[in-house]
Length: 93
Length: 486
Image 1 (cartoon, rainbow over the protein chains, first blue to last red):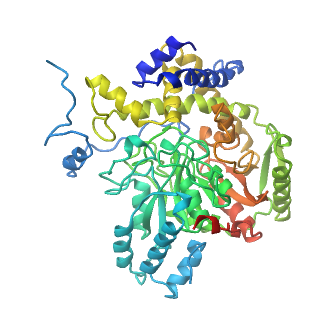
Image 2 (cartoon, helix red, strand yellow):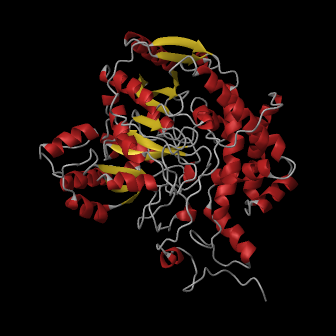
Image 3 (cartoon, rainbow over the protein chains, first blue to last red):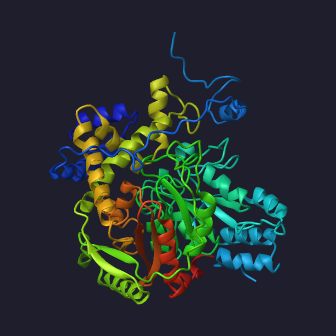
């Protein structure tokens, strides 16, 4: 885990780390990667991953029209909105 | 007449005999929350709505539920319509949900009163409640000591007798470990038993809601209301929900309890070991039989969890971008800058650490080595459980390797030190199994928890074994001295 890798992960996760905390984070990540790296010694050949303890496919329910439109309530939670949309800094010139 | 430290069963008696009205009960519960403000177990109190609802409770209705008029606290991770829900994070510090979590809705439909939202580790990521944006929660048994986490506020509120029960969520031990550290009972049900709709997601394949209460019987009362299929949660189990109170009193004679060979308890504090041996003897006296069993892969639970949980968290927490809800940073240059600054200013250090680990584990070139590998080991761990449950009914372990510890005494230099707190609890989440923690004595005046793990959907056996233990002991009746918190 070098500084460049940490920078790449931060970019992917859309996070920035303060300069003074960056070394500490790098060290912490190394420790945790070492912990999870210990799994490499376990033989998992021919073992299917278990992504969910229930191992079932998602239930489907009927696609029925519902009338609980809460648009106004949802928009209230946004930092900026107009009557129909969430507003963000301009993305096209 | 004080209602402090009363169980739901005891409060029902007082309500039935009209010694107290639902309004008075709710009011007193809110007063207690204010009186013990220094514990810091509440993020938000729900005073006005609680008063209104408690005044409207009619206990004379024929089908009045055992939760009718009972004050409860909800972990601040459950969405509550119109009531601020923060997940103890700056990024959600102004979030007012437009809807309620199904689990909360079911409890409220049964007549319970939500008096407030409890403090927790930020986004449930922690085992000590020290990562909350709203500050540490104190353990009611000792000021300056952690209540455990992540459902630390819920555990402290119940242990301090402010409410008889509260909700929590458990991703790697977040109900059981704080229950153990605070001397109360906490149940993590089978994955899928309770709807996760409206629960702010941390690790979706591990998260499960459950009750924290003064005893197993009260946990059963809450579980009865909280359980059931919900079409809004695609991982909700469509299976029958038994009445968990029905067989809670039955004898446990002949019940086979497994002791896990791979957990070397001799590494633990000798007093913690002693409590464990004493409880084993107590169960033997109640007719249970102990069998040593082997789960060869269980020691890999902690590294498996710390690969899967951060991976799922990095995906789930990508929704916090400052656009639709939550904190938005000021003075941003463009859309990407808005994402980066809102997230970087809004999340605390532990949350960032886990997002980064998860992003790494899921990134190109590492997916197979870390994430897929962990999910394969997870199957081995689940297979081990399937195997032992062919010959036993329950497993028994300590809940936590230690008692509650002082603030900032663990994990400050090395986060993995704190991750090992979850050693005994994590495997139940990986396999989706139900597990309960019950108080079974103290070490240095701090409570110690005993964990029982059950097979898939066998919460009934867990509650039965816990209740029978509690009807033959009084550890669950111990009360902390709260003089220091007034």
